[in-house]
Length: 370
Image (cartoon, rainbow, N blue to C red; front, side, top):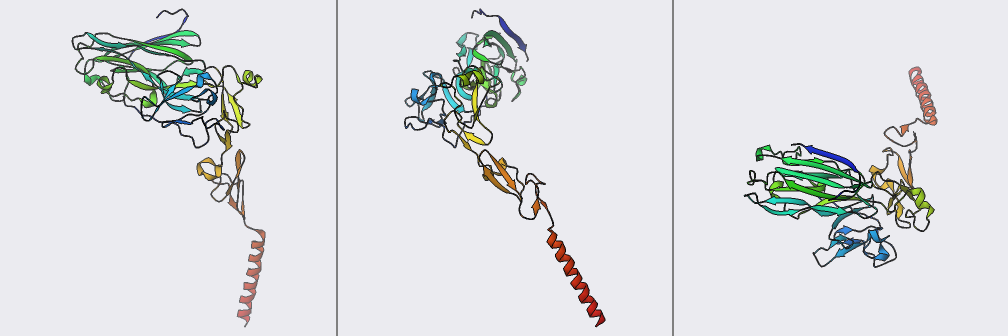
């Protein structure tokens, strides 16, 4: 690769999978309304607007998806017309896609058997998530470079994984012995993974004969020494991608009334920490799809004890966007928290006690005199 931009980062680090998948589930309308052709699912994956499988069901071309019914059962959700399978879309501004890993494999005599370099060019509105992913290198003679574009500048991050025997490996640990991991820079819009093997695996072919390197969702991958043999060439692993609904700032977007995406009365515009652009979210006390008209609906906090902090004795009343706590009769306080409702003694109860006391005293006196 030839770099024409100034290099922003260079890290060369020598230090000497178990996969977990999850997907979002929404219990409110997420697809574009009043259009029966706008499907909100593809197989088991939900498709929230601004994403959609047709022009009329998506916000813009870059949010177009394909539901492929011919390749598998259940069908697979693909990003636009690529072969990148999407396994989850979050309205918080992320989606997860399956990305082919890079590998460099050798036969026991040191002859290369297969090699594959991996990379991706993200469209405008999309960046690689820098906190959910890790750049990972596996092998016993492995060196790999993670290089790409961040904020219009070239960066290079490199690392090595080395070992001489299975005894060097530790389950769940990426300390450079068989596995190396490093953080990913912010605002990465494209990247390539380039790998090589230092010794062609002639001394470790019994338990390791490949170098693997990839960006992967950190919560979905846990190193195991079996990874050195059970990862397959062209295997795909999950990668988290950030998305924004529009480029520019919230202030700039509001000036374009026809293109502004935060159209709901109960939505707010905000800037993410990774990527250039803006997103929408429902205001506090509301949930739903902020990119749909009337998509943010009131949350009834009183139906879920984890959503309100009313005292156990207080009654909870739902309001639009919030709730109130009210103490019962003969209690005082704001109704919130452990000490929100405290017992108070009514004045008439004290008076009754005095009257009763005088009557008893008079009765006892009369008995003595009698």
